[in-house]
Length: 66
Image 1 (tube, rainbow, N blue to C red):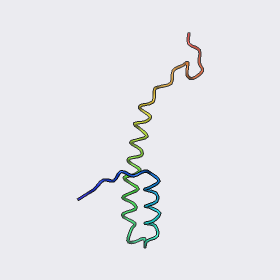
Image 2 (tube, rainbow, N blue to C red):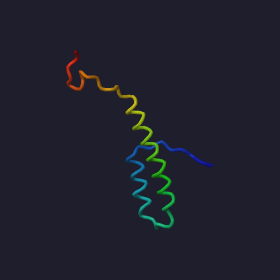
Image 3 (cartoon, rainbow, N blue to C red):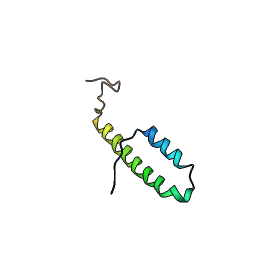
């Protein structure tokens, strides 16, 4: 069974730092899984944000419109 958590980036980083205090062989796969899922979600959010931003117009780039 899987669960999904809704955490801020700084909260996830705190969890990862806390896990890092445990023996590596006990937590390595868990840290890897958290990082993979987090990186994928951040990439999706950045892509959505970039797509939502309007394309620059010649006027906004300092060019003159003829």
